[in-house]
Image (cartoon, one colour):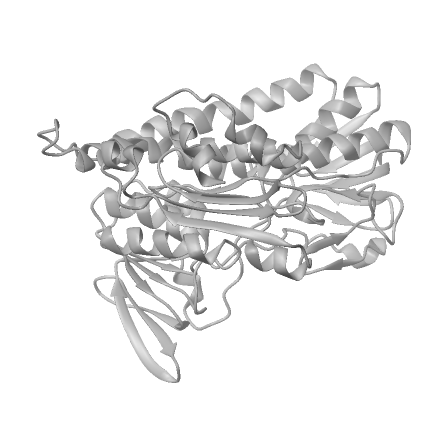
Length: 448
């Protein structure tokens, strides 16, 4: 039996942060991941996705300026962009493992299961640790209808050797929308089937409707209020069966993708054997990110049921807090600054702070500024019809509570709003700032 001060399950951003920080303070650390080291973001999510989007951005920009200085709209070369993406992905696991070895962290490549409150079965090894950290991330939701095994995952999409002629996404969240935009701009016929009345439910719906419009204008077939009930393999692809308000409906497509959410990847860990409380949202933890039922266990990132959004920078923040508590004892409480989040469609949609619904629920005296800015100079020079904002303002304190944008570079502009919310900057101070002009950020004072 091997013994450690700290043993980490999962090598994504929170697990990596914990392992490296604890090892640098002299603790004996081990880490395991049944998948290549690096986690979802670096290998199967944000990073590879953003590399692929790069090619579609060029096509989108060219299309918007066709006839206004651009004659030819380039095509996306799927094979080339996937090879470029893979150059980033392939470099990551060996680089991360080398970093662990340099810090004397023992590395394992097997799944882990709890045997007791502080012991694990990791492959053929039995491991005992003073503290065990669960940072195993999230994985695609299991679909429970006939033929669900035919649905591919988001990982499969990011590894497609060739782009199918037609794709259908089950679920109307950010993964479906981002991948739908990529595939449509690369020349595929795309359908999104969502069981809810509104897609992207957690975002400000006044802004989502602009993205829905942009998505439909791209040629994506968006089907709402339709539950997928089965997938049947055919000679040419698949027949997807659905139920819309009690009526049966079918769709034919070459490939089907499961983008119906990503629950925590914790349900195969035999948590009961270690007396670890959990829910469908993750491991139940206290303000120190320690298990509420087993003091030897901590959790962070998508594995933990916290107030943090399922975002890479949040996982890193939680990793730092957790590591500090392992090193110094429980002295650091997890606290979240405003968490900007982005849907990387084209145009991008970004949010930070409160939605109007949340401000109303909190009983705050607020004011809303909501407008389509398609007639503004920035929209016209870029020929973008979908440019809109919604800001939520605290009327008494005259500070910003929330900002919700759709339009070019909104993924960058949202960071300025996040800073203004965090620092409780007065509206008048923001209005009187000098921004470089003409940039997207120079529109900020006019959005308040």
